[in-house]
Image (cartoon, rainbow, N blue to C red):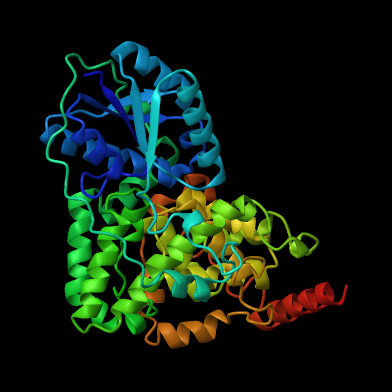
Length: 460
């Protein structure tokens, strides 16, 4: 009856949680723990703050089933060793993750624990398809999305696991840190109070989102998801990031909608698989999150950080839809997906700034930050990544805005929202009159400069 340590990471839920389900089935005491470890310490301001909100809600859910969430800080292997000694546990279980720093940590933990005689088990929960189970005919990994989709779309995933209804408690709980003492929102400063109005935290809120999407939005998803002023997406990226809803639960809801004749549900399913594709690539090519996925882009003359990038970050480019999107990000912690493509294209092409500058900013400001999806999205729009748009596809923000925000509702909404000025650092010293009268880089000039640079790269 030695306890089992359940290491919680990006899986803040009770339903379809394989590691938790397995631990519960053993009939032994289970000690759930979240570790503020060497990977978590690297997270940006908004992700760290949002994780704290998710942990508070998860703690309440665990208490509802007679358990508790332990909190510890330190290197993962050191914390788990200490807990094993303190509690007499002989087993540690968790759900797998696939980005390089997560895998390095987890590999160290699993090897060390097993060498020391502790059972260490990991489970699939964060993706639909394990990266090593999807192979091309030649036995390699997929580098293009459409063949990847075709390879997995008809696979049988099995039913999502039911919610865990009880976890046996140990005779005595080990000591736990206080979540408030961690102050996970410290880097958000005054912005936390603004963004807090736009979060949907926890498993129950996530399931409500999914139900609402399937019942009221999925029918028009293919078109509505691109309209900037329309609430036409599922909004589930926030909850999937923290595992507040299982990806299989979303998949089965989409499959049922498709079976019920809601044709746009297939587009939703493709978006779920696009997320899987990002983790597939992050697993097989770890450089995806830190370096140009296509090495031939290493010599491309992108600019580093500077005045142009800072104007972009602050929503002061003079391009209405770009500045509106950057303000939406600062107020809500999220950004419309179409807008993400536009601001990415503008930064990397019109401003000729390295995609890593934008990728890092999103990693600091997004509450739905997913390291694999974020990096793949930035490399896709920059041209350096898998399935990249060709170099000559340079989004014109003005024409895109006319198409996807024809009545300028989105632009007015965010350019006129004073909440932005309540959220930004006071050191920015910006107000309603701070935007330039003319764009910092004209759209025609920016396009010409980008095309010239791309053509020069191809000529060399």
